[in-house]
Amino acid sequence: MTDFTSEASCFEVEGLSLAYDGKPALRDLTLRIPRQRVTAFIGPSGCGKSTLLRVLNRLHDLNEDVSRQGRVVLAGQDIHAPDVDVAELRRRVGMVFQTPNPFPMSIYDNVAFGVRLQGIKRKRVLDEIVEWSLESAALWDEVKDRLHSSAWTLSGGQQQRLVIARTLAVQPEVLLLDEPASALDPISTLKIEELIRSLKSRLTLVLVTHNMQQAARVSDYTAFLQDGELIEYAATDNLFTNPRLRRTENYITGRMS
Amino acid sequence: MDITNDIHSQHISKQFNHELEELKTHLMAMGGLVEKQVQDAIEALLEGDSRLAERVRDNDKAVNDMQIKIDEEATRVLARRQPAASDLRLVLAVIRATSDLERIGDEANKIARNALALVESGRNAHGFIEVRHISEHVRRMVRDALTAFARFDTELAVKVVHEDDAVDSEYTTAMRSLMTFMMEDPRSISSILSVMWILRALERIGDHADNLAEYVIYLVKGLDVRHTASDKLDDQVSKHKS
Picture 1 (cartoon, rainbow over the protein chains, first blue to last red):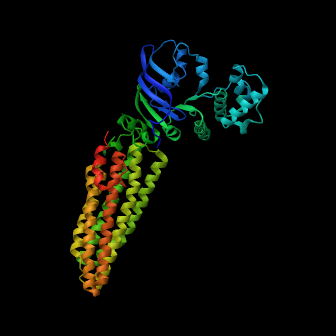
Picture 2 (picture 1 turned 135 degrees about the vertical axis):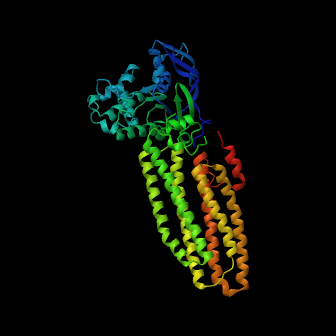
């Protein structure tokens, strides 16, 4: 069993509250997300798990009605500090959504997109990064002979792995995954889960999922949220065999609460 | 978090409630049958009733069939429901419990077999007082372990675990005195050996009741005490509260 206290931190969330238009979505959350581990957020719809995920790379900035208290610290730095470059933060903290969203261009150009934005133009370098990223996303063998076909010729599961490759290409430290497999068939889902496991040797992964078995399969730590509050946060091995609180037990075992 | 015995009736899925209730009910039925087997085997011995002993031997198949049926049900729940937390612990505890109950059934069968041998030899063997005494003790343990399972009662379960120490020491004393009888009267060796096998079976039944009690603690508290020394048990179980 993994010991929680001995883990190095990636994120430290301290007293985080967030409200949309005055309506509270997160209430005074304090938690540590360990580095190079998979942490899952679970909870019923509207519990705040996606909101919490979005705060981690400041996607909530795009919404003007949001008010926030508390701090989110990434590797020692407050991500809301005025001198933080948001674009750079989002490079370090990549995000993958429920529905795969490849750009309307070739597989190669999709992966090279972010890298080109950083000013890298040399074909040899780009080729290397594209191959490395597709390898890392476990997609290379399936697409190496058709790198210049449209990304839309790929299946849903392949598109999701392409999006992950595109995110990996800019060398992020963290990958946020918001229901990354909920639109995929079971086999593609298993491939994504396998990929999540293989990536944790170099990245921190944070996963939001409605599928509790998925959280149980892939995560090292699980946080259970309800009504914007952090109810229980523990090693996944413990949370799914012997939760500390009745509210957690009721949720993960499908009981009325 | 400690759980209570009504927890498996609160799922949103009524069918899931039903499946878990069935598992518990069937386990209790198997427990009842096994208890009866032990009681009949001892009665057959003490009363010299060979027909009753034969019946115990015939019924052993029913015990085995129940084990297979309950294990199949438990496997189906695992495959279809992927239970977690207390539900998962219930299914695991049931699977483990059927295995111990089935072996208690085997021990009852052994007692019946040796009872038959004794009845046929027509000798009034030594050791019947010890058999009566220890058998009452272990039957109470089995009954208490099953009650603890039905009520999710960890206090009663802890008591059963302690009882097993007492049975073990009674068993050692009884064996020693039977050994003395054998040395004094070599002609009685074969019948005393049968009694010794019976005592051995009873002692094993006590061990299985002890296992059942440990599963109750696991089920209710999520605490695995299978390899905990019994003098440290009370401390561990009472400390493990949240």
